Image 1 (tube, rainbow, N blue to C red):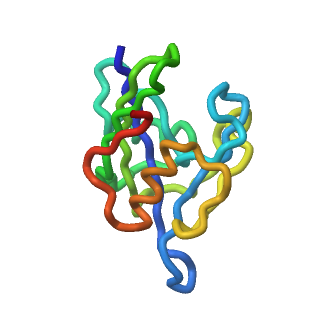
Image 2 (image 1 turned 60 degrees about the vertical axis):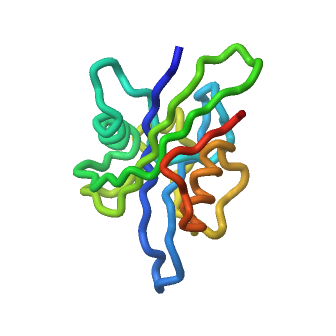
Length: 149
């Protein structure tokens, strides 16, 4: 079974024009990569929902922002070799414009929400998301990426 998910990476220019920043959340009590920094909003695409609709829904549910000006960044095919998990397809979007002030809506699942320079990410970052963030930082993120192969 292939499990689709959408990720939203909010980007902004750092104060003082020192580069691009990304908004990341610190995961807690989710059962997956707790204690890791991750996209500010992400989640599974529900039946009958487009990847873009899922991204907008997750951003509203997790960080209270709407009217996202989404830009497709990459699709990632992901596996974990011999581990008993489903195969994954992840849709990553960036947004540089939205309405509302990002805030933690689900404090039981999110310990912190903070802006970081793309050139100086915190540690640890969810590994497959780090691949995407590094591609964004370098400016050479391909339309299709892979992880775990």
